[in-house]
Length: 373
Image (tube, rainbow, N blue to C red):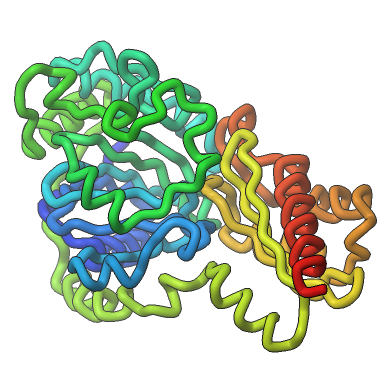
């Protein structure tokens, strides 16, 4: 018997509605023990901040407010901060109970050929996956991406595709791009790095075309897709959750500015450091003498569970800052634990990557002490 997925066409959504809808559909997928697929297109210009990202390193919140650009932090999911212009990007996502589907690499491997089939139907057959995550075209240009995440009882596989060119000038006004971010990219300039379905296909590609191509590819893979509207219960829950998703505390969940202000008030030395390994890692430390009395970890990594980097920060707290071996060991106890998952381990974040970010943060704190002296 063919597997059956529920399909919800979410259509045009703003950042807050989209985030709220995810939580609503997660609960329904669990309650019904049924995979749920959704597609949508961004209906409002916004910055979509990764769960682990340092908001102050990636986003100019004051400029966003002045220009009317929405800012939201993705709940629980990793990856970097992304800029989505109105009507320029489509999204898809599959939510399913994790039992029997907890292997993230296997879930990505299963979904990759379906996505490539859909792209081929749209005239985007030259596009290929780089690793498990990025959809790339000529000369390493990025058309979109896909990721898998373990949310405990739910496994999520989803991605996005650029249909048309965003306003890059607006993006550069509201976003802060760390120098390390593009160090390993073949194309340095954002205008060249990002490409669109329209550019690849040589014609405009609509949301409806993408949606229908994806559904056709899924059905050809032997999966039954049952289209359904949101239930009345789901609509009520969506309206309530949408009001909560714009909460400022959520947006500032990881904030170097807040970290600095909190610990400078206690007279502690503060330092921050970035390291671009397989993923961009950012660390912050607060020192009392030689002791790390507080830490923060940020970056564009895809790691589950969602508290992983908070646990890394807690693990290094209390350590003597000159104990390099101890630093790496404490980090490894968390990120190399059996309960921590990353899809495509060859491009995941490592204990060594995080240790190097912390070493740079400690060097920055030492420079801060010299400056104070």
